[in-house]
Length: 272
Image 1 (cartoon, rainbow, N blue to C red):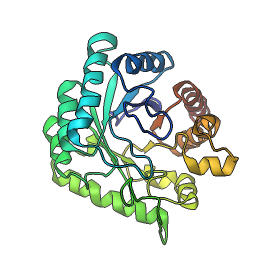
Image 2 (cartoon, helix red, strand yellow):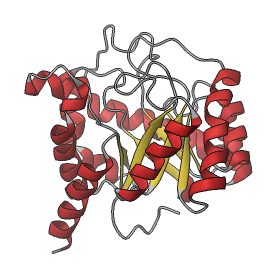
Image 3 (cartoon, helix red, strand yellow):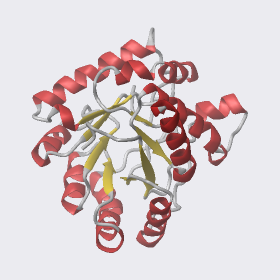
């Protein structure tokens, strides 16, 4: 699905949660969620990433049953009323949620724990033969920003991802169905996030499609002296353009239109 991409893909965030850091509560009912999907489709989105559990720093876990109550009706509604072809990813670390979402029409699993929180999710991906995104995270959402520390963040994150890639392969997931994400903002300090962004080419060199998720992240606000996440659209688009030039293939964002433009212009420059 992702091995021969013609151009970078934009993954639009759809949080059907009451407490996500930037858009919590906005799309927690099916009608509002569908309207947001329609908007993202009109702006050029390639993948809709649906999550029923906030993973902002300090957040508490949500049970798989509650996640399913939030996400499954939205997935079914998208398939029934909007677009039968749009790619849908399920943002969850729980195997039960991933399985139910795929059965409802999702195509991709996006696991921010890379299979560490619920290893059975790797078997779900293998059984259904769907792509899975393995993200690096230090700690849990509840504690990850308390005191994160690395001696040398880039090789440490790479080595952690390589370990989980090997576990995924041993679980029966094919190489073609593995994507990786360095996990910007997940158990990282500002200097760690900047170092990862400066060395995205090293992640691309591993030979797996790379997803970048910087959208409206707090570390950029500290650079720009901005406290409101929604005011970091331009900052996010800058990282998207840099990511394209480094070879990143997927970008997980709140603001589809602006990042679609940034990705397309950077891609045209790179192709020239």
